[in-house]
Amino acid sequence: MSSAIIDEKASSEHVEADVGFNWERYGSEPELVEAYKTIMSWTPEERSKRERTLVRKLDLMIMLPVVIMYVTNYLDRNSIAQARVSGLATATHITNEQYSLVNGIFCGTVKLLTSPDISYIFAQPPANLILSKSRPSIFLPCAMALWAIVSTCTAATTSLGTLVAVRFILGICEGPFFPGAAFWLTCWYTRAEIGRRYALYVGGICLSSAFGGLISAGIISGLSGKHGIAGWQWIFIIEGALTFCVAIIVFFVIPDYPHTAKKLKPIDRVLAQLRLDEDAGTTPSTKEPPMREGFMMAVKDYRTWCIGTLQFCITNMIGFNFFYPTLIEGLGYTNNITILLLSAPPYIAALIFSFCMGLNADRTNKRILHWEASFAVTAVGLILLIGLANVNSPGGRYACTYILAAGSFAAYSVAYPWVASLVPRPLTKRAVVIAIANSLSNLGAFVSSYVFYSVFGPTYRTSWIMVLGMTLYSAIMVWWLKRMNDKRNVTLAEVEERYKNGEISDAELETMEPDAQMAARAGFRLGS
Image 1 (cartoon, rainbow, N blue to C red):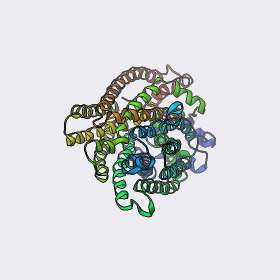
Image 2: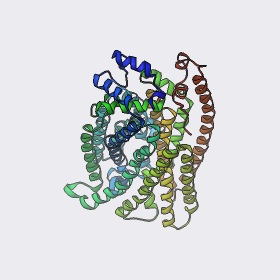
Image 3: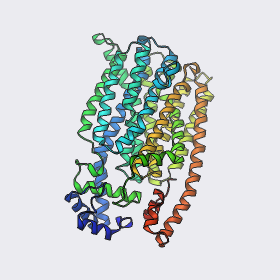
Image 4: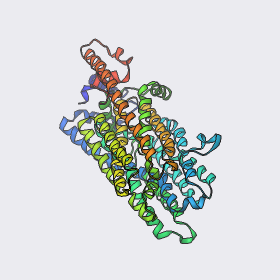
């Protein structure tokens, strides 16, 4: 398998000289050199068996902690939705309109700079560049501990000003996590493995949204008023403390990157990196470009901004998440605990549907087809909500939110695996593409604060119409990107054929675009 992309003669000379194995992504320790030699001696059956064992180990060391971290991330970020219907609005003296300010903007001339979602936007691109050159095992848990502390401080807010200030700082602390973890996952899993794992990762939103309501209901019913602390304050205190404890545990569990993962055996470290190189069509001696060059490559690529606008729209599709308890309240329910309990089931349905879509997308390698199918399901839910807006059918409208949640979260979970298939290398470019996409995603969250403005309640028919427009735009954009990818794949096929026929030398290949190099060496094609 590896002989398809590695010049074995050159590799052998490098290893024997104990010089060429000083590859940036592997390391020069003698045990790593020996591990590489051992892997090269395996039969395909032995290699396949060891890879399956390694992936199971990675799922325990990486996927499980990441999902738990993201659950707590969204619990802390979204706990304000449960707190709002549990007394926060009264205690901080904020109106429905001011709640949208807290979720989206502040006021007056400084409103863009004081948005918690805008603080996410500022934090993410530089954070991902730093993460690509630093240690995730330190960076991610530290960010987690910081946002846990800030989230807990929300319990002490008493006014609109203090609430907005805390939410802005929370955005700065939480901002690096999602794009950082999304990028980090692509540094461990191949394109054929990443889809279902991203679905689980994004499923953290569904889990936190579902169990957030259940946890909040339990906290309010059991602790409201205890020690002179209101129920909504207990929500922030308990969930913040839980997040801080998880951050400490994660620090001792997660590895960094394959070439620095001291928590793995040498043979697992080399195998982890080698299979990623093979998947991307690079050689062990391929060097990563400088940070600035990777940044500029991402900024100049039109696909970066297409993906970013898609994420902007998709975030508006799931924007109801921050207002869901309020939407349930608009159906006629008044008991806070009932509202919180009813907010849980649609997210469980969304989690199951998203995982099934991600799993099937991995198996068929037809990510765009699954993306378009997710948009179709979302559109059905939205059209039904629009049609039932003025009908006295709270049960019917509630049922439609199941369809909306399933389709919109599935679309969200398919997005990032597609980015990984579009930009497998260089890593710095991929880190920036993911960060920019997620920054525009949070700009979408900023806008969704006004898409679901209280003046559109209680039916929010106007809101659903706006979201439907974004869904249709997304479907058209994905169709157009597929056409562009198909055209590029024709060119990549020609490059591969010419390279195999000796019409393109190795020196000439090195001057070409990264996707052309990967096509020539490993038959790489853009995602479809």
